[in-house]
Amino acid sequence: MKKIMLGVFVSAVMLVQTVPVLAAGTSGGIILKQAVGARAQGMGEVFTGVADDVTTLFWNVGGLSRAKGFQVNATYLTGLADSTYEQITGTYQAGKLGTFGLGVNLLQGGMITLDNADGSTSDVQSQSDFAISAGFGTAINKKLGVGLGLKMLSSTLAEEVSATAFALDLGMLLAVSKQLSIGLVLQNAGTEIKYQDEGDPLPLTARLGAGYQVPISKQHKGLLAVDLVKSNDNDFGLHMGVEYWYAKLLAMRLGYKAGYDLEGLTAGFGVRFNVLQLDYAFGLISELNHTHKVSLSLVL
Image (cartoon, rainbow, N blue to C red; front, side, top):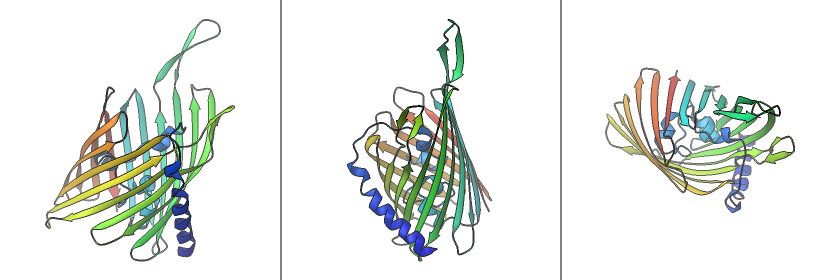
C-alpha cells in the first residue's frame, strides 16, 4: 500500500509541474473552490503545509496521514450574494494502514427571475451544487505522508439544466523538522462539467505551502503559514496566515490573500472545550458583502 501511495505522490509532482504554465481562463465547478473550515479561512485560506486537522481532506489530501482518531467538521458560510455553503467532513484512522476521509458539500445560489414564453415570470434558484469527496492518506515513513482523493460533482442551473463531473486530488506532506512542514498538492484533475453542449474544465489547482510552529512557551503556541497557489482560472495567488493559541483553549487568527481581484484580508478566532472546537472567520471582500464562516469540529 505504501509503495502504491508513493507512486501516487510521484505522479502528483509530475502533474503539478504542468499547472504553472496554464494560462488563466474560465472554469466550472465553483463548489470545488469553496474553502472548508473556518480555521483555515481565518488564516487567509492557508493550510497546504499545515494540514493537521480533519479539513485537510479539502486542503491537502496528503495531510490525512497526520489525522488521528476520529474527527468531524461542519461548516456554514453566508455572505456571497445571497448564496449559502454548507459542508460536513469526517476522518477515521485505521491503525497503521492510514486514515480515510469523507466529505459532503452543498452550495445554494441566490434566487433569480426568469421570463417565460407566455409573458409570465418565475423565481428559481440560480444554481445548486452538490459534491462528495473521499480520500485516503498514509505515512510512507516518519517524515513523509501521501494521499489520494476522489470527487464527484453534480450541478444544476436555474432548476433545469444539470451536469456531472469527476475529479481526483494527489498530495503530500513532508515534516522537515518538528516545527517545519511542507505540503504539495494537485486538486481537481478531472472531466469537464458539461451543461448540454457547453462544457468548462474543473478548477485545476496546484498548491505549495509551508507551516512553521513557533515555539513560544508551554501556554502560548504560534503558527506561521504561507501558500503559493496556481489554478487554471487565475494567476498566481499568495496566501499568508498566522495563528496564536493560548493554553489550547483560545485561538486568534489573521490572514491575507494577494493576487486576487476581490479578496484580501481575513481574520478569525477559535474556542476549544474538551473534544469540541468552535471556529469563526471573517473575510473582507472589496465592493461586495463580507463573508462570515462558522465551523464546529469534534475530535475523539
